[in-house]
Amino acid sequence: MFELAAELKRDCIELADWPLCKVLLLNDSQYPWFILVPRKNGLKEIIDLSEQDQIVFIKESAILSKLIQEVFNPDKLNVAALGNMVAQLHIHHIARFKTDAVWPAPVWGKLPVKPYSNEQIGEIINQFADI
Image (cartoon, rainbow, N blue to C red; front, side, top):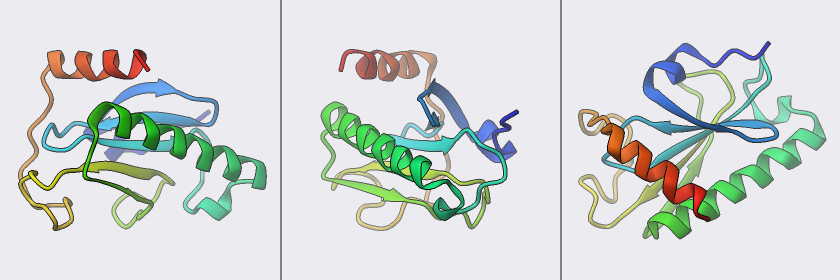
C-alpha cells in the first residue's frame, strides 16, 4: 500500500489522486506550489519508474503545469524534482511572479510559511474543478 512521506503529509494538503500521482498543494499561501507524487513505494528517481509510468508522470506534470498557467497566469513556472530533503520521488510545480517576495531567487527556505485559510483552499479546489 502506498505511503506518502511524512514531510509531505505534514507540509501539504492532498487535493486529488490522478491515475499515477497524488496531487498536493504545499501549505504556503505565498506561492501557488503544487507537488506530484507517484503513488508507488520505494521510488527516489524518475528512472525508478517503469517506462510506461515515466510517460504518465510527465503527462500528469504537463497537465498540472497547464492548469497552473490557466488558473494563476504566472510570470514563470518552476518545475523541479530535487529530493534532497524528501527522498520520495516527487516533482514541484511552483507558480512564480515578478511581484512575489523573493523574486527572482529560489523560494526554498526564504520566508516563514503562511498557511492557507480553509477559504483559500476551497477557492483553489474550485478553480481547478472549473477547468
